[in-house]
Image (cartoon, rainbow, N blue to C red; front, side, top):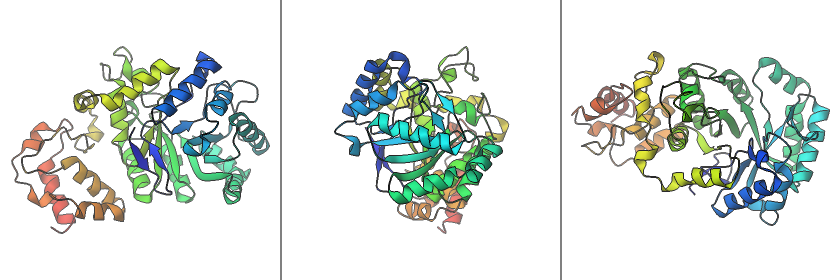
Amino acid sequence: MEYRKLPHGEEHVGIIGLGSSSLGASGEAEAEKTVALALENGVNFFDMAAGDATPFPAYGRALSGCRDQVFLQVHFGADYRSGKYGWTLELDEIKRSVEWQLKALRTDYIDFGFLHCIDEEADLEAAIQQGTISYIEQLQRQGVVRHIGLSTHTPAIAQKVLDLRILDLLMFSINPAYDYRHGEYAIGSGGERAALYRRCEAEGVGISVMKPFSGGQLLDAKTSPFGQALTEYQCIQYALDRPGVLTVLPGVRGREDLKRILGFFHAPQREREYSLLGGFTPQESAGRCVYCNHCQPCPAGLDVGLMNKYYDLALAGDELAKSHYANLSVKAGSCIGCGHCDSRCPFRVGQMQRMQEIAAYFGE
């Protein structure tokens, strides 16, 4: 397992966590064994937006004795008291649901208390007016909630909640289909979505990724919007390369799914590489570096993708990105203009020109 630090905290989060949306389908015993296997492999981040109530007691037993070593996303608005998944904006219902979740999980605190599935303006207004946000903030002051989060599929809603300056973590749907405007939750243009990721990183708000495979759509050539299947590892790497991302949360049905997902850490780089997307780049996204590093190796030793990332983040107001760039041993000014990167870039980025822009911006 590899870990990334939460910017607004000291927590180090595994870059692959566990999504629970499909975990209940295999039954409570298999769910418990799957969580135990995840723990054995260094997984320490678990999302509790489940498809039904089955995983909750399984988690409660599996995490007994190690609760302080893991992080749970608990959703304020997801209701499992009937045994099935339900969604509510009513504060009294939310309070009762959270109480039920805590009891089932055998815990008295929440690492990340999430406003759940706020996709519409009306949902956000209700969360504000009915006091849900105030309630989560109250629990944070009491130490019951450690960090505040939001789950949404809508970039404009995420931007509005970021404006409130309350978030430590954003749960957002990131995959090539949605970023390229394909699929049910492909909300916002590629530029809007990229701007959201950059803002999160610039302001220290981490991102936990849901739907990395677009609900399985990307894994089958018959349903992939690109006309060919991507692999799970390509989708995971794509999400991890977006600015601000801390962890990717694939939904698993049991241990076999989990074992396959964790194979990501042993896969050679060529199995994670997703530059084939360059052939499907929409007009609005052409010419935008996605930090895939397909242009490597650079004859002059430049880390082209990383320099582009620091430049984009600096433009978004991230002061830390400037210091990171300053610490690079080889900078954009060392570009020799050989054209290797331009010829290799699947996204048609003029990297030689970008190197000149980056060098000028950072005052080389």
